[in-house]
Amino acid sequence: MPYDITRFLDQFAASSPQLPALRFAGRTTTYRQLNERVDRLAGALLAKGLTPKVDRLFVLDKNHPATLELTLASARAGLTCVIGNFRLAPEEVAWAITDAQATLVVVGQEFAPMLEGLRARLPKVTTVVVLGGDGDQYEPLVAQGPALAHRVPHDDDDAFLQLYTSGTTGFPKGALLTHRSVGAHTSAMIDAFRFDAKAVSLVPMPLFHVGGICWALLSLHVGAVAVVSRDPSPASMLKDFVGEGITHTFVVPAILHGFMAMPDFASFDLSRLEKVAYGAAPMPLPLLQKVLGAMRCDFVQVYGMTEMSGVFCLLDGDDHRNAAHPERLVSAGRITRGTELRVVHPSTGKDVPPGTLGEFWVRGEQRLRSYWAREADTKQAITEDGWLRTGDAGRVDEHGYVYVQDRVKDMVISGGENVYPAEVERVLVTMAAVSEVAVFGVPHEKWGETLRAAVVLKSGASATEAECIAFCRQHLAHYKCPTQVEFLAALPRNPTGKVLKKDLRAPHWVGHTRSV
Image (tube, rainbow, N blue to C red; front, side, top):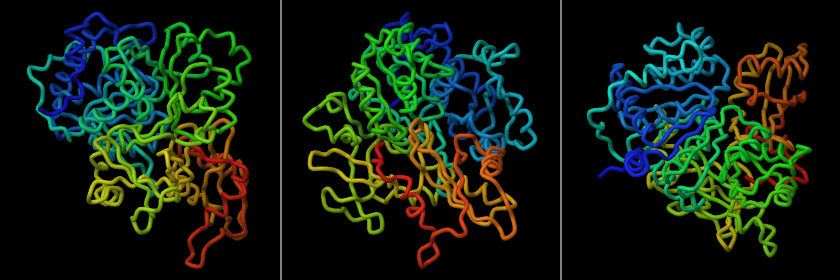
């Protein structure tokens, strides 16, 4: 029988119907209510004319239980739910909806005016449902939806979730995640994080991120409660830790930096907090050491990617406080159950000797099915025998600990968000004064990395750092924009003409150890 990512709803709706499943903004949804809502929503989507295994819907909002409901309803209805990044600029949103070929869009009220302004550019979109506010259309959709008469048949490798991950071509790629891949990730992480029905999990990561949506599914799959945070900040999260009795959460290092910067941090009672997972951005070692001294809960560093449905490597709590092996604090830990890892020469694809730097290739049931409508990119990323080329470079020591040294590709991770320089370069080079540009990551105390642009101006032209940054912000989400700009007479190149970004980066990383 195919694996069903929603089967936990049937299980807990029958065995523990009154247990809370979701908490959000003072409202609690029980497992029975969540099961009923997902069933009605699935029926409503099909009643809107969406065709199983054909049509796709797009969600654009900050964190809200509706995103989880729509994801689960899509799985039951045989549809694909595409979760959009609400931080994108309008033209980026239009591109994503068009690329996803979505016919129905659910949009949060605060983003509805932007979407309305884009409608003329979205001819394939036939239905828009506004979520929240006085004109809320989402709750009536759920209430009036006919419950599914029967579940739409599916296979393990049917995709029900699509998340965008940046690509080296300058445009994002849609990773197709399946019942099999997300189910395998959920099973492995429940074991790794020791989730059980007593857990109270805070979900602060954006649900368009694999660390948001797949983290939320962990607690739901064991009958625990997920507390969804809409506008998380260090201060709001500490209040949730106390007020909601949070036991588990997943954060980016920038949040931990914010905790340490709060003068009243020590006054918060964090005695119920058991486990804090962190990742999605480099963790500065001094910050980690400070956090370990200030907080007594277990910390788990996670290393993963959207293409693997989330985490496939982690450094557990014992390793964080192992005085005999302090060097492991800069490792990403060890591979989790169900995933294989190789370290290969990126050019030859052959394994390198143990302890030698190479590219990480991973394989397992957590792997994405493919990239949406990107056959060439899929073939480039996945080998014929199923290995996923991660693009990350590093080594594995004799005890199986993974050390991520750098990235084969140029991706920059800033505040937990993946940014490919090619995407930024594509925009900045269209600025009238700019002749050439190279964008790369430099260390940042709070965000892990930030973007720096090396710009060559056209002869006789002029531009300032502020003007270059402002131009980017007209076309890109702010987190993708450079915060630093340097002006050069020429970009460094090798004999074949390729820009030597390593030469541009090197002076900025002196004295820094990268850790993911």
